[in-house]
Image 1 (cartoon, rainbow, N blue to C red):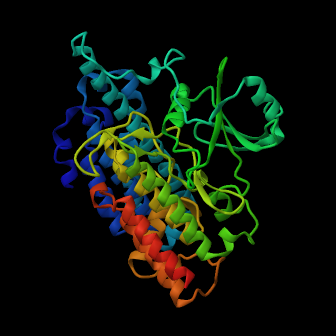
Image 2 (cartoon, one colour):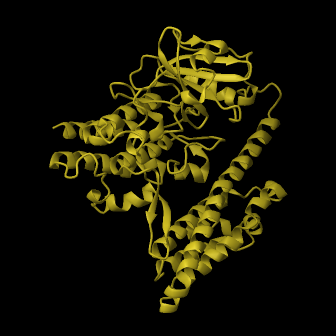
Image 3 (cartoon, rainbow, N blue to C red):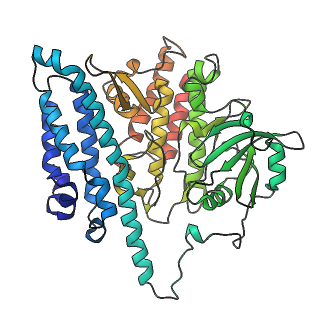
Amino acid sequence: MALWAGLGQAATVAQLVGVDAGGLISLITQAALTARQNKKACEQLSRRVHMIADLLPHLQEPELMRRPEFQRPLAGLGDTLREAHDLVMVCQRKSRFYRFFMSGRLADKFRDIQSRLDSYLLVVPFISYIALTHNLNRICDSLPQNHAILPSPASTSQSHPIHVWEGVARFTLAEIAAASNSYAFFTKVGKGTSGTVYRGRLRDGRDVAIKRISKTAQDREMVLRTELAVVPHPRHSHFVRLLGWCAEEDERLLVTEYMSNGSLHDHLHGRKPPSSPVTASWKTRVEVLLGASRAIKHLHRSFVPSVIHCNIKSSNILLNASWTPRLSDLGFSVRHETGEGEHHYQYQLQVVGKGGYIDPEYCRTGRLTPATDVYSFGVVMLEVLTGRPPVITTRGEEEQGEVQTDLVHFALPLIEAGELDKVLDGRPEPRPTPMKIEALQWVANTAVVCLHRQSILRPRISEVVANLETALRLATG
């Protein structure tokens, strides 16, 4: 594996893992290709170790990697890789003894090892980000005292004024409490990445959504300020309208218009009745995708510098009373550093996105570009096409039981093989017309290029918008 050329000389990683990880991962991959039993589980195991292979080369900061707090989380990785290799080797055997005595034990073993590998896939990026932060702090410490640098998120406080659009009100804590019945449980409508959302009613009778930013959320002050600073004009048609905010005592809250038809996620994944237009109509689904893509385009193209949303997912695409899609949750968005071209990048020192939506290139490098949003939106397009969530549970071989996999690995091979009909959601129309099939093929082909592992090969969001406009014309015809 060429990817491991540099890692083979990195003693720090080998010492941490306690094994020649590159060689062992190569053996696992080769054995998975020739497995006679549990082939699907072996392939999934192979994909997981490949992802670990992509991440480990970033752990090459000798000073940090010698510290116990970095060594402990990776202490068992070598043993886990050895067990994964032994397990895949067992699956090369094919006999009645294997089927009778080993099938149940192997299913349990697959689940155990996959769970452990998943935990390493979570912890390695965090260690990498801490190492990156350490390096950046060291660079900042070496700057002259009079060198001008931007304030860190931790430095923001009430001494820094908050600038918002005219017409966005500042509410008192008493007004918020009255509107939400003091955050009564029956007013709770959802929980997001940065806090809990409640339904409320203002004194003037307007129904609103009140986002109570979690007190345990990292950089909660920055979440509030980012929402207020980045949110487009309150009248923009494809964003949830911001009505007001509150920063009083230890509370940080945002007040927005109430979106009575819930989220795209609700309609695709069972929390809304099957008769809803989003569930029952391909045309409406394409309209929702188009509206959301226009919102992302506004962030990428209308701001200077442009804005990366960083948390595109179906639960952040909300629907108002007339089924118009509105993008929400701008609290983790970042300004894109000025650079040459669409794919100039910057580092982001926090995990963005959620399982199933996360850009694999961001996972490997910690670098953000507008293409990070494009990847996540590609996953949303697959959700709309298939009706399946970003992480799905499938039925494996008889001895394997249920297996979790991500939607991208499930759907993309079939779409690329020209078998879109095998993954299409059957709820809108069991037998779509040829015109609708062509429209859905436009959506599917666009999703495929959005989900390219290399960000530089993904389309600009303006191209995605153009393709979805074509798809909508076909779906309407």
